[in-house]
Length: 101
Image (cartoon, rainbow, N blue to C red; front, side, top):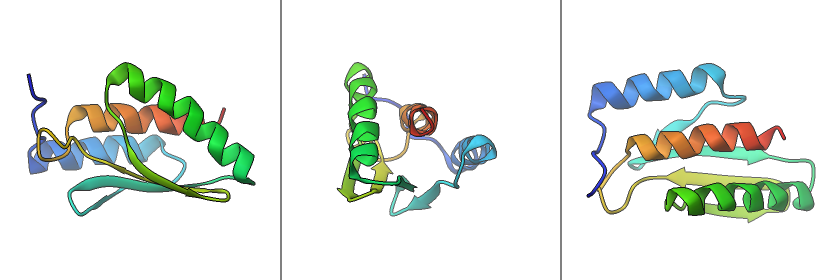
């Protein structure tokens, strides 16, 4: 069963809820939920990605991301649904938590 794409009202409310507690705001960019995480060095950034990967695998929901030194750029969307779903927000909240660990 494919996840349901959030309608504009649900999307905005979910984004507001996420950003209320986020260290830095997430944004909607090209039908993706996007954010840049900054870390003091490569090892910290890569450690974050490793921790996120374990959770992403459990969700069977994998981010589009890139890493350059201490920066991790993240874009979340549910490809099979064709847009942003609640699962994208669930993974974003997990990333917020893991970024400060």
